[in-house]
Length: 253
Image (tube, rainbow, N blue to C red; front, side, top):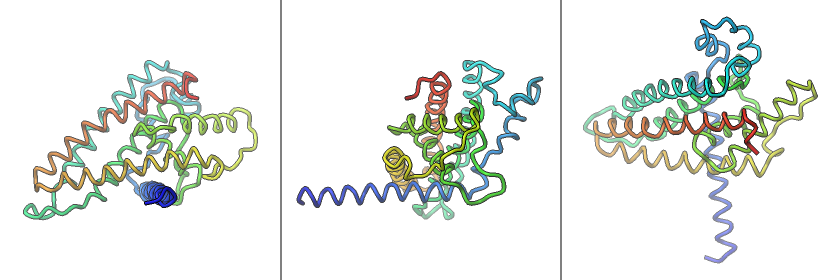
């Protein structure tokens, strides 16, 4: 293979990874289990707080210190990790216990669905606004980019921290200064978004392969699937919470 041929193959593979991410994000956005209503979540978390109205209007960070929010985040992560591990165990069982069918796509979508669900909870805890537009099944380009950034942050993908910081700065400019917002598009931050999307696509593909392998042995596959999910899910949540902490401290570039 010549250098130019190798370059073409590399570009093609990158495009496929980006396409994988976009398709996954679109599928997740249409899944009811993924969406977290910001107000409902905050009301449940701070039901006994005398500052509930302020929390709903300005975010929990307007009332609580970052260290306290981080401790709350750990509880959210632990609860979510347990739920997704149990769900993964059920999904890891073949319909016929004597036949191992590699249906990794469904389980993988569920896995990243739970990840995005938890990411929203953590983001709302640290002051983010509603991710999905109320009552709409189709998502805006801004929402799509934010989901890519959230997943990238959860997975430890290079460049996702910077993308999260950029999104946050734009949101602050719109809310704080009441300035006219530029439409956030994939082309606006083309290199940054594409890099994160491509790396997220690689992670999704690897998860699909790993998930298929765990289903090779019937029944035991379910145990493996649930165990691996719990073992990887908590660090993902902690990683994202740490990113949100750094963002709140102004430490993200």
